[in-house]
Length: 318
Ligand code: CP
Ligand code: NVA
Image (cartoon, rainbow, N blue to C red):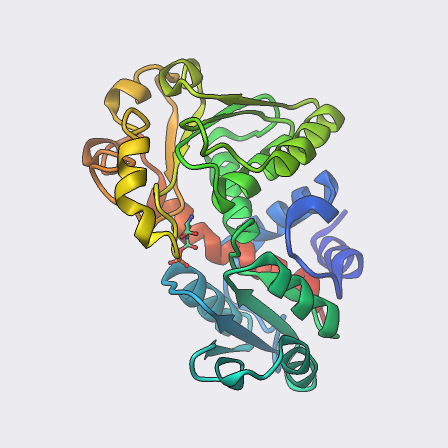
């Protein structure tokens, strides 16, 4: 397939689709997005989305998601609007469904960062343009695509690699499990008791692992989990909205810090990844995150490249 055909097929296959999680995407869809992201990384400026507008609704803070989506739209000739729920009428009680229908009349896609997956589903149900999950309480799919893109970039493959997530079984862990299982990776998630990923997400990831020759294991022993790993991943112990649980979580997560001793269990060339923002000396030591095995800033940059591929595919190539 030549490049033009590849770009055209990317748009025809996924055009108009929402991206709430990777669950209604296939391995072929993800592979195609990864290939297109690589092309867009090498050829950043284009007019693929000339005249197109992305609305970005934020109910929570963001640095990477906000800036990478906005810069990505500009690089493709389009425009992005930052809408904080405190400033738009949602903050004064206008319904999600009315907002979805109104915005669909103005823009070509809507990105939503929200406290609840149900709100995201409601927005997607009532919007006639693609809706992209920019993080919710259950998933963070754009992050997961950047994660596997970064691994592929360094390792040259995904299938058969061992990825170990140490920490909270949260939104980032959920999306990482799903996409890694879908790409045929061996996924191990090591959490304290009571902080495991949601059982329905684990079940979905196991189903994908079966289909794509991957595996999913839940562990409570980070050192054992890390043995022979190609990638070690962690995220904050208290996510946005869990500030009140911070102290309790700090206690519960003792022993789940990614430090040099955990990294030493992994392969010599293992990568360290973190979605960021990070809390040094909590979930990860400065020695690891600022050390030679860390790819966190490449990973953050890659958010933009993969999201451009997502935008191009869902909005459509013209
Ligand atoms: N990783 C991530 O989504 O970062 P932001 O919260 O800064 O967008
Ligand atoms: N789990 C974190 C990810 C931040 C990008 C949160 O939800 O706050």
